[in-house]
Image (cartoon, rainbow, N blue to C red; front, top):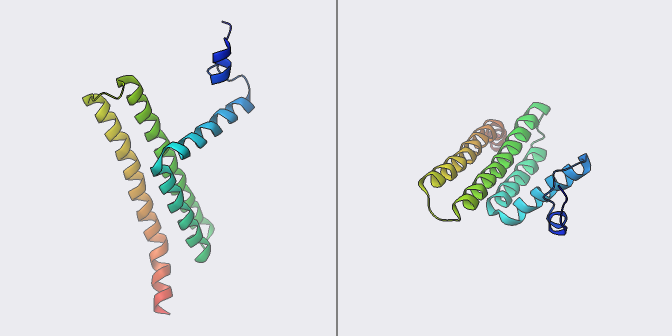
Length: 135
């Protein structure tokens, strides 16, 4: 099926190369940072945790846990954004109980991941902070 000029301009054709796929993914990353306040908040928190990690000289396993938590929170925020956009698109932004349910569950997934990340950060950083205060 031939593309018209609008299809080409809006990149709605299926990707034919790895480079195109990466470009589309990077567009998605830029979009979520531009449009989603919570993504920017999570990123600032991640940056602060990384700074703390350098300050406290985390070992490789601690970095692994911190990196995993950061990745999971950011990925869950992106999936939450996808869910919100799909619900808004299909409901035309009109209230629908199933749409609300889907959005609430997606937000809960982000919340659970963030709580887990706080728990991991506490396990890693609180003993180090305690040692710093004792000596």
